[in-house]
Length: 249
Image 1 (tube, rainbow, N blue to C red):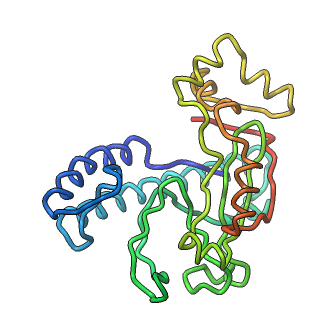
Image 2 (image 1 turned 135 degrees about the horizontal axis):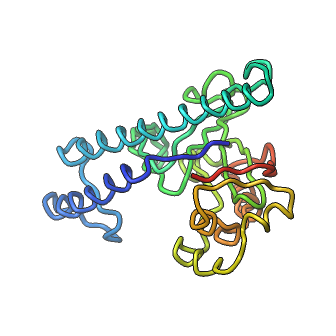
Image 3 (image 1 turned 60 degrees about the vertical axis):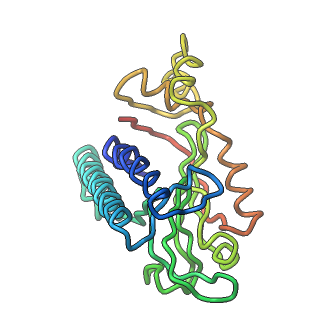
């Protein structure tokens, strides 16, 4: 599993456009239940500028993942003296979260074209949906749910009920319990790499600080998160994966 987003680029897009959207709310006379839902009409200059910047950040992240996947295959080929094809190292699926998509959904009994912005969520369309790639259309859209580097991660699939209940959305990961700074404070004096090694997990990180930020206790219980999504009918479990080697950049 390879997980990288747009890093500081995406953060900057969000930071810049929060200001733009807050002004747009006043400009267009929008009434919102929460100021954090700041937005603009989809055809407005503000919205179109945001969508362009967001898609640029998404492309940056996609390129990151493709490059890392290529170098990962090269590393396996070099160490194991064979080809990535021989090892079956093909890409299963690539998905973005924290992204807006133009989709058709049912609203009050009518089909409408919507801009669905999934923050902290992943698209999870059901079997048979035309936007699910042909290879997976009979099963449903694959959903990759990273947990933490010391427990488990999951592969889920979208459901028909989820399409009705959440416009085809489910969780995108375990989610943090501790902020990065709080995790660093909690990990003070501990050797996170040694703790993971004792559990049979080899870890390589850019620094001790990165390991502290990503310590297992910094995240929610992924089993509980996934079970909750399944119980709510938003997605269905397909596979549970255990870490044996982790690299944190």
